[in-house]
Image (cartoon, rainbow over all chains, first blue to last red; front, top):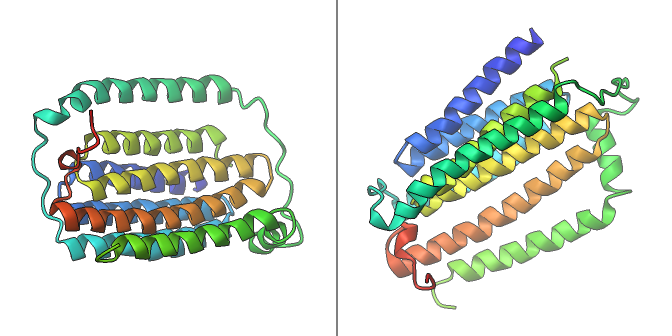
Length: 168
Length: 100
């Protein structure tokens, strides 16, 4: 049952990720990407990472992808033209390099995890829930990175406004 | 319990699709979406390894990756809007002023 749910979600997410590459209209790619993110949120939920699953839906599909769709509609991004001669280097070098990446990743995963050498017994979930434990960690061990993240987001806001302004 | 290998294989598949899309897409917004796909593939392996080791630190890394992805999307789409305003195209091959 658990494996079945995982396989269904994994197949849907990989299929919609492949659909991103097939579609030529950016808006259809964006919608497939949203489907991929929702499937990943389901997988996180299955791994008992409830906080991350909710963040995945709220931040990725709720904020980032809405921004993408908004920009696509704002710029009236139409169909991609056929790749012309300038991209020939990418076409001839890119595909072999991707195949190399597949072989590399596959062999690393198979050789290092095939025997599940370092299986650690699953400790029972603590008295706190997933979200509460993450909150405790974020405001104790990871308090400095959390504050730095707020500075990063502030800089990003200022930068985005400056970049999108009519005249600099 | 689903073995860790399955999660890592799914993560590798999604990452590879993201790399492939980044290489073959010529529309700057589509290339951006492929970067987001790669970030998500990495997040998946973070969460899977966090579950394997019964540690929460991996999930906290995912939280930070999401914050950086949000900042990156805001700034990147600002650049896309500025590029479109100056060049009237979204084709990355048209923006080649600094290319050798």
